Length: 378
Image (cartoon, rainbow, N blue to C red; front, top):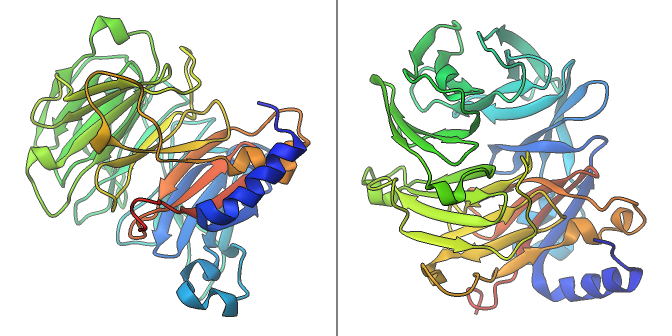
């Protein structure tokens, strides 16, 4: 979508009232990964160029200044640690409780292990490589294990999903299901139970104590689309009803399910968003960790992130309307004069600040923003 100079100026004036905070940063190369490494820091990595730069960034200190923002001059992101990968990075996760991150690239099926450093060094160093037995050189999805010993769940297709111990490279678990369906995403529910979402929307639930998996295919009416998923779980509770799964298709279909009945979604709706039936690597849906029943969506077709409150959703009726839409990437100065408007590649919620998110786009822009909810903030 082409943005006129007047429209961008109007958005900027309006943003003074619609954002509590909005800070922007320009990366040399765009990222499709944003991973939290601490309360005030993130890790990003480029997916274009000759090689990938991995950076740990400190969020603008002004974001945390509260009522004393006027006394804080630090409005920019600050590079804390950095390093380089010879292959472009497609996925990046941090192992909980450590300064270790694991990456997968676009040209191999190996897991690369990195130490993102401490106070004694500003260099991110590669400390190991785990070569995987994979039939696909691309598209390996990864998720951190939740056990005491650092491990990573990984796979490009369902039959290749494994849990691997990082320190030794030993395979701890393998999914016992013959399926060539590609993996869209995977995530642990607790230390043993995990979910896999296939690109065709099928859900599989597994347990590392049992090689068999439960299989929940979609109805035929929604097949042929590309799907992404997000899992909302309360780590302090083990009840299945406390874990909610959102599945988003490339045509805007949204399905909400809980672990008690993954075959039958308790809510189905259609978002009024730009869509395509083709595969989309930038399709993202994510639950808010603090705001109850709120989720965010970036479809990978424009420069917008939408926030929805699912408590207002019903199984029938009109398409739900977002409570807020972040259009900062398409309204940025660089975007106004670009022949190809930026597309949001990924976004992530802050783990403790209710309405703070980060988002990145194909033009290398990186935003952290906190929106004003006129209902919540009354």
